[in-house]
Image: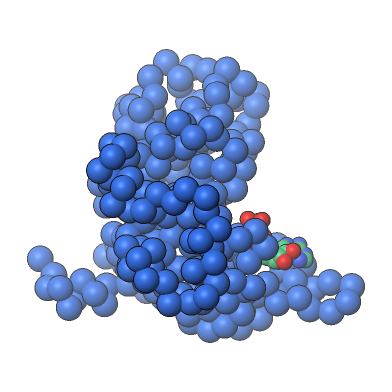
Length: 286
Ligand SMILES: Nc1ncnc2c1ncn2[C@@H]1O[C@H](COP(=O)(O)OP(=O)(O)OP(=O)(O)O)[C@@H](O)[C@H]1O
């Protein structure tokens, strides 16, 4: 067992001085500016901030999925896969980068419910990812799909269905199950509950918390909704105009925000769910 001090320094991701720009007709627009951020192995880290603060751009940069006109202008992103050799994701290209995707590093994109292929049965969408990224596990697909569906609270018959037969919340859960299929070390989820009704949001948050328990996966959860952070995350980083203005234990940040912007963000929520409340009163995730 690692000691507390070892645990404290066991970062799965270390982001240093990361700056991301979009080329526009009027010059470069800096969407992420000099971000320093550590993600600790096994934690759920929230990234908060209003729309346009740079959360999705940060996520895409971390995953090396940023497309032109976006580009990483400077910085380093050290990824330390479980039991593997650390890599600087910014310097990793091509096959080496593909090898990390799904198996080590997985992404649940914003609006991901629309990213399922409408003309493929759910089981075939699992098979596609597994066969493409871990061909040696092809023989396990039949066993894996029902197990993964059950793990996110879906009936195994969902495997035979097409996306249009599923509700938004069910589609989101299918995507979460595909995300964990190859047991990644780190999942970055962008607005996983947006566009879902409140009851389903709660179920999705519970499923994310369960995935951490079951797989020991580290999660970075991006959300503009401070209620999501209150219910789910261990630490929260607050973004404002491309910078991280505050990062800390979620209880501390909610109880005693250090930055004015964070204070405003918390105060602007009409009925705040504090971490304590969500656990005690409503049987929520924590
Ligand atoms: N392709 C692009 N070209 C130019 N600017 C962009 C582009 N994509 C995003 N931006 C700008 O970068 C900034 C950060 O956007 P980003 O989508 O990362 O924010 P966000 O916090 O994730 O907000 P949201 O939740 O609304 O997506 C915004 O000002 C946005 O207008």
